[in-house]
Length: 455
Ligand code: UD1
Ligand code: CA
Image (cartoon, rainbow, N blue to C red; front, side):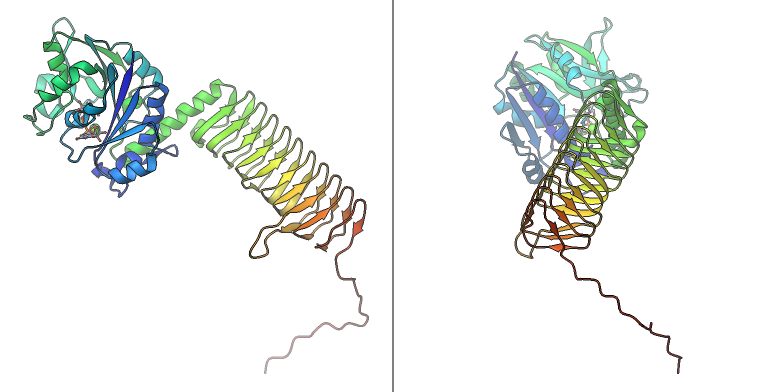
C-alpha cells in the first residue's frame, strides 16, 4: 500500500500570542511540526506534503528538507480547502491527514489506523472525551456505523451530547478525493470548507468508515495556547521517562527529567534529578549522572560517572572515565578510558589519554594529553594569541605542576615534569624538569606599610 501524508499547518494560532507561527513552537526542543514530520517519516510514505500559510516563509526555512513538499494555502478557508491545495501532488493509493499542531501522535497508532484504509474504506481516528466541547462529533447510525461528522458549532443538543470526538486524523483512498473535494461547500456555521464533510459523502458513496481509537487522549491533543503547550511538554517528558525506565534506567524523579532530542540508553543507568539530555545522546551501561547536569550531543561509555552540575556538550567520555562536579566539557572533548576531570575544569577540543587526570580549576583548549599524564590545579593552556588558536601537546606520564600557563604552540614530551607556577612556552624534552618561574628572593628587615593618620 502506497501512502501520501498531508500535514495541515497553515493555521494562525492567535492564542499563542506570539510572532512565531504556532507549529514552530517547541515541545521537547523540537517544533511541534518537527515532531509530526518525524512520525510521518517513520511510515515511509511516497510523499510528505506540508500545507503552510501563516508564517509560511519561516516554517519553510526552519524545516526545509529534501523529502518535504511545502504547499502554500494563501487563505485559511478550512481544513477541506487545505487538503485540496495538496491534491495535485498526491500520487499514492492512500492519503493520511495529520495536524502540524498535534505533536504527540504515535507511529503505532497511525499504523493501526492505516490498516483500516482501502479502496472502499476510510480510517478515522477518534477519541472519547469527558468534555468534547469544540470537537467535531462522530455521528453513528442505529447499527453503530459512522454516518457523518458534525462540527461542534453546527451540532444540535443531541449531537453535542456525543462524547466520541474527531481527532482530525484520517486516512482515505486518493482516487475518491478530488470528487469529494469538488463537492465541499462552506455553507456552515463557520463559513469554512470542512474536511470532515467527506465522511458523509463517503458513506453516501457506499464506502465504510472504520474507526480506530487513540488510547491516550494526549496523543491527539493539539496546542492552541501556551498552557496546552506546557501540558504536551510534560506529557512528552513523562512518556520519554517511562520509555527509558523500561529499558533499564533508574530515574530518581521522572517529573524532574527532560529529554530534548534522541537518547539511546544501556542498562543500570542512574540519572539523578534535574538532568537535561539534548540532541543525540548515547548512554551505555552502568553510567551514573548526578543532579543538575546538561548533556548534549555526547556519548557516555560504560561506567562513566558525571557528577553534579556538569555541562557536557559534544564530548565523548570513555569507559570508566569521570567528570565533575562542575565540569564543563565543550565540543571536541574526548576522554579515553578512566580519564578523570574534576571540579571547575573546562575542556574544549581536547583529548585526554587513558587515566590522564585533570582534577581542579583548569582550562585546556586544543590540547592533546597523553596517557597517565597529570595536570596540576589551576593550569591553563594559552591557546589563543588573539588571532589564531594553537595546539598544546603533552606526552605520556607527564606531570604538570600546579598553576602552570602552557603557552601554545608547545609540546612537552613523555615523562617530563614542569614546576609549579611555571609559564611554559618552550619545548620540553622527555624526562626533563622545566622550571619557568622567577626565582624566589627573601628580603630581610622588611617593614610593612603602616596606616596614615587621617588629617
Ligand atoms: C478540526 C476538525 C474537528 C476536530 C478538531 C480536532 C474540521 C472542520 N474540524 O476542528 O472535527 O474535532 O479539528 O482538533 O476539520 N488548518 C489549515 N488550514 C485551514 C484550516 C485549518 O492548515 O484553512 C490546520 C490548522 O493549522 C490546524 C488544523 O488544520 O493544524 C485544524 O484546524 P483547526 O482550525 O484547529 O480545526 P478545528 O476547528 O479545531
Ligand atoms: Ca483545533
